[in-house]
Length: 70
Image (tube, rainbow, N blue to C red):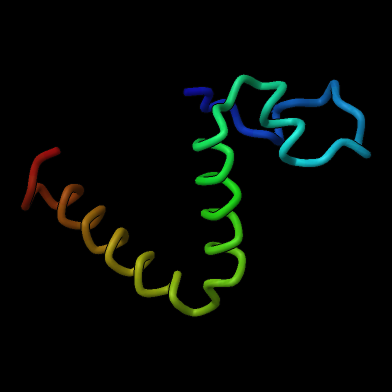
């Protein structure tokens, strides 16, 4: 699975679709579907993300305070 962020790829034509770019980067069809679905979900998630971020910040605080270990 290719995990390189699209922002780091600079040598592609801007008129190429996201699907074409992901295909060129070696993503499988299932991975492309998942990535595009996740991007849409996060972009349209609105305030749903705030709750997730609060949970992550709480876990981070517990780790920093030594209450839980990684």
